[in-house]
Every structure is written in structure tokens, then in C-alpha cells.
Length: 146
Image (cartoon, rainbow, N blue to C red; front, side, top):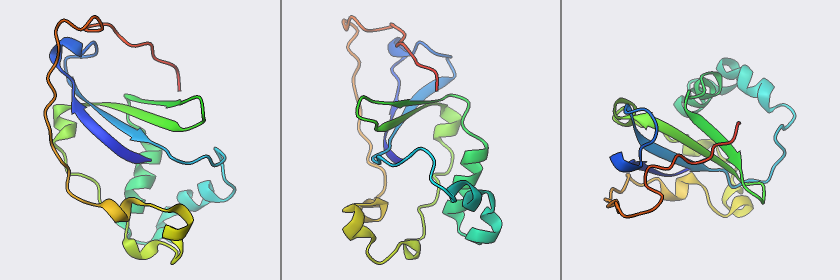
């Protein structure tokens, strides 16, 4: 999933725990089957199959330790969305490593048109201002189970 953005939730919109201060949004841009034969086995054999590649190790660690406040949803056309509410401490932690660019097939860009390696730039920061007259202020959104 591609990381789309992380925002600091304005206090007046934060209807969760006071420790939750940020929302990270990720988007899946694939329309593949939910389960592809051999992938789970490949990831379960991580140490053997993947060697010392830090990206794959962090991915396997994530699969075995999904974040406690993660919410996964699919939209009407089957795209996956992941919302993770995080604390200031989590936001301040080290960012994960990007995958090793040498691990992609030679024709990857042709097959998929874009990938994380075409845009692995540093994070860009901007500020949003809350509008206290907004009628949605303080209303807890309807959440769906995973």
C-alpha cells in the first residue's frame, strides 16, 4: 500500500483518545485477489527467502504485528484503504526503509507504470487550519469492522 499522507488531527476534531494525535492514510492501487498462492509461504519463510533486506523484514514484522488502531476498508470499486491512528511518540519514530531498488524485475515500470522508486523523496510538510464553525466538528465517523 502506498502512504498517501499523515495529518495531525486538530483537537476539536479528535473524537478518539487524547493520546491519538495523527492519522496516516494508505491506499492500495491493486485489484488482485485477496490471496495469491505462494505469497504467505514466501513471507512466512522470510529469513530464508529474503535474506537481510530491511524492507522485507519490516513488512514481515508488520504482518505479524498489525497496529492496534489500524482500520482497513474497501471502497465501491475494490480499492483498499488503510487508516492508522497514531500517537506523537509513534509519529516521531524512525521512518521505515524503502525497498532495495535492485529487487524489481527489469520490466516492472512497463508493467505497472509507476512505483515507489520513481518518487522516493523526503516528506513534504504543510499546515491545515481547522474551521470551528464546521458542522462536522466533534462528530465521530461511522467505522466498519475489518
